[in-house]
Length: 131
Length: 409
Image (tube, rainbow over all chains, first blue to last red):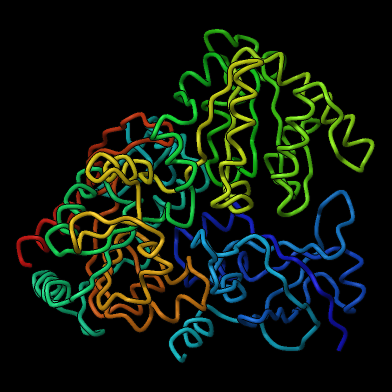
């Protein structure tokens, strides 16, 4: 299975913020959070299309989310975007350095196509509880 | 008129109508605020101990027992609590000899400290509306995080000296790694930088302000930065609105920003207002600063101690009881750290069910501030906003809950 290496930058989205206010367990919150926005070329490399699921791996965790084609004007191979959420936080390093601030906005990850379903919030909770 | 506690703008122009004790109509809310209002009916927390529903008094009693018995308790959250609750929380931490920290610890803390200590010049949002002509949104995206920032204060409105508004009187600049909704509004004023490229951009800007050629490979960008230097020099009242993009890029090297702030104030007049997310993060930072000389990361175990070891991301390694108020810590932290949090006996106080409350031993439901409970808070610019409850509910305020725990400890 082809993999593409990316740096993930997390961001806030107004629609996701609204859904978060209403409840973290809703389908709407998951649909607006469990996403990765990829460059068109990177999507081609892993033979994925807009709306298909992808697996994102880092040394710290794995998550299955929906791939979306980035709407940036310029090409940005190797750069991906995810809404800040428990899904993106599965991937963030536990090392916080001298600042004690986690690296939320520069996450080195590998992305590959998958047939797996998008992780639910319950899946994430189970993983956090299990360790 | 009601106050929305959906973000640190604390919009105080929310009109609402109630029908039979329920809100039937609202005006002036942004999408995020609308979500907060709708949440009144969704996923409300119930008092529980070890997953079993108990009375409110029993939950308070168990919380006090857990915190009182702990050798090394940690009290975290606070940015979604009123000033009144924060003061009681600090007293509770003193009484328990606890560590206390808030969301600024992994958010705007570094910059907020500079502002609160008077090291960076700042101003109010009302002054921004009346006087600001050059606006720099740096690693911030108010359109998504503080949705009425640009319409109430910074870009669109007419002001005392800005009668022609954004069309002619204001120049907006956005420095970001992505084309955010705010970038779309600022259009030509967009400077795209690579992730972590903020320090380099500061250097380039300093060069441009000094009349030197910025060390940037891209020729177009070089020209653009030179032009930006000229625009910045002409400002009558410039304001920088830094967001998490800038903070997370610089982190504890935030001092790299200082020469730029200094230089900008040599050639023109520039202020800085950190783009705080939670409605009263600044309130907690200011209150704790007045009490202890530090804005966050404080331990009362042996007098007053401060340091990175008391940051929540570190303190969870050593604490034997945790109280989280108004924050979904498990969702907000990297899973690698959340796994540690999940193993700590936790008391969670929140209006709603969330991942942290689901993993807590004791849950205590609280009122939604600004809607079900009154109090006061500091807006992102330090202006104090007071609010009254606008609907009746049986939920207790954070301040009342903390007072009860304090009495019971």
